[in-house]
Image 1 (cartoon, helix red, strand yellow):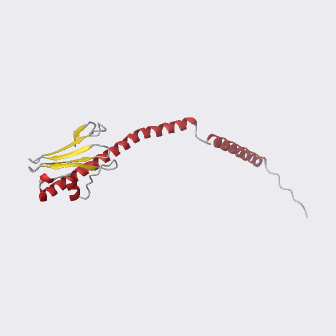
Image 2 (tube, rainbow, N blue to C red; image 1 turned 120 degrees about the horizontal axis):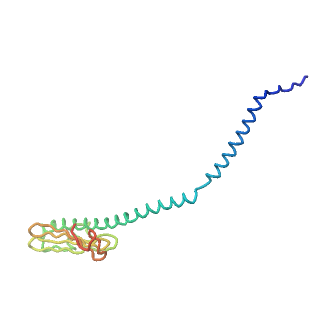
Image 3 (cartoon, one colour; image 1 turned 90 degrees about the vertical axis):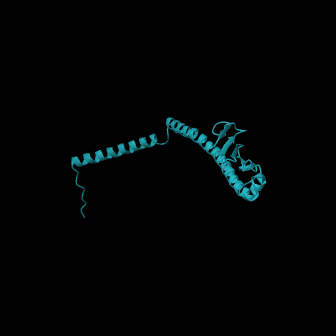
Amino acid sequence: MKLSHPKPRPRAAMARIGTSARRLRRVRRDGARRAREDAGLSLVEVLVASLIVGILAAVAIPALLGTSHTATDVQAKEMASSAATAAVTFASDHGYGAITAAELAAEEPGITTAPSKQHAYLSEASGSESGAYSVTAVAADGDELTISHASDGSVTRSCYSPLLKKGCAGSERSSW
């Protein structure tokens, strides 16, 4: 059996193999360098990201706090409106002079008269035989919202903020 030796490669083919090997080494070296560079975030990138998150929090937190204050006032406005409707219903059977907070709570089950820091409640209700009545609901934050119905049919809605002094449209007293 005769052993055959591989044919010698031409010089151009040998040059291509060398070039491929050099290219492969360069790709490996560049890839390793890029991996080291992209290993994490720089200090500047972390500081910029922290600054952006801080600005967003500074804008969002006051907006969310204002929303909760608005929600407590809306709950008290709803309580006062329900009490005013109940006052008209109650007065059709018993007259306006007999209106009290307890009577309105008995007329409308959704009306609460027990003071609470968690939800709005009806603090007072009164009426006169002339057809005038007034109901006052207190919000969880202490704002007092009143609906007054005069005998001539005019309606007044007022707000008094004894605790916060700014709860009623930014002032101690206002209308709604």
